[in-house]
Length: 157
Image (cartoon, rainbow, N blue to C red; front, top):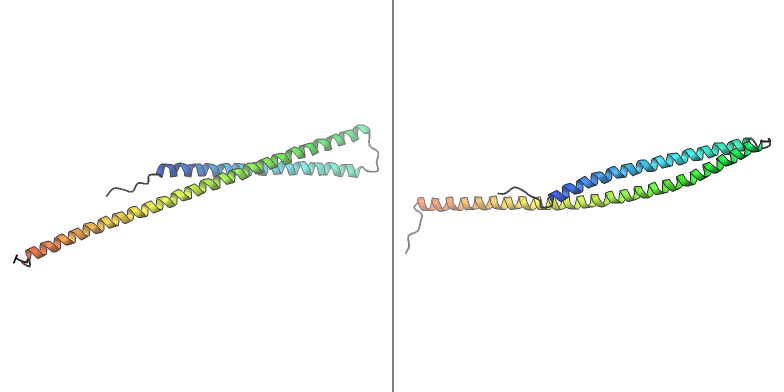
């Protein structure tokens, strides 16, 4: 009997590779989200430190150039925080898209795997039927031979 062949084997192999690539892309997107969040946290901590310095200097007179420098610094940090929040949001959207892509490919691979298992089971059953047919044929021939050799064959009346 011929060996098992799944007609969609190449497609299954390609989909599995695509699933692995999607998994890698999802990991990269997760790392990008983590990096963006870490940068945002650093900026927020920096702004907190600047605010604490301003709070600590309340009641003391500061030279105008120092006050302007602190105000400018806090404004730049605030703008960086807004940009960083947008980057976190974009990174999270990319992560979501990567997760959806991976889930889609995983579903396709699972469907192809299930189909492959079904086809393999059908092939196994076909082999078993063919083996049983050969055994039945062999048994029938032996039975016929034993009837013919044993003299049990009936003569025409």
